[in-house]
Image 1 (cartoon, helix red, strand yellow):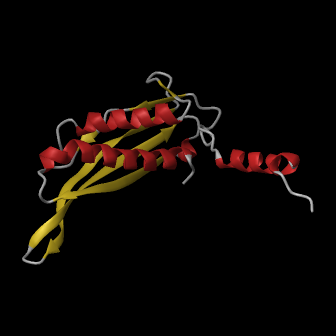
Image 2: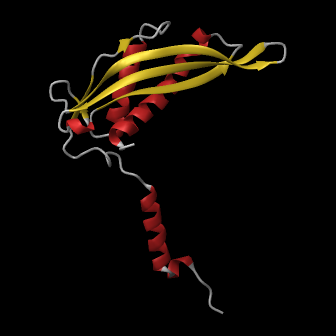
Image 3: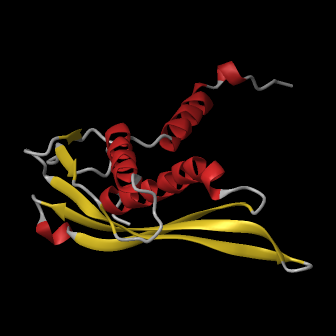
Length: 169
């Protein structure tokens, strides 16, 4: 009886390598080759109780997302794509009441309004609200966990915005 060995079957090795290659997705795959530059304009804060730096913190998060996951270069003067908008919502809600009317969790929810402008193809322009949240223990003060929550929420928001802008979602 003949034994099957992995090294004796180059076709199987080739199939495995091709299969693994198809699992990898290329950055910039959905960014038009005609685009090279983007710009993130100043965001406004229209939400009550939002931290005073949330607008600039979000702008930086969005810039970093686009710079790190695309080949686009940040340049105000040559921008072919422009993002602008506002922090429209910043709310904390009590969740999950426990017996005895105490609250186990709180939820920080942030809404960002985004205007996307494609100077090379105005048919692709859009305005949309993006809403994400993170929960935290009612035993914690918001001020103690806010920075960590903002990072989590900004990661989710920037991912959704990036996918909408460049993933044809």
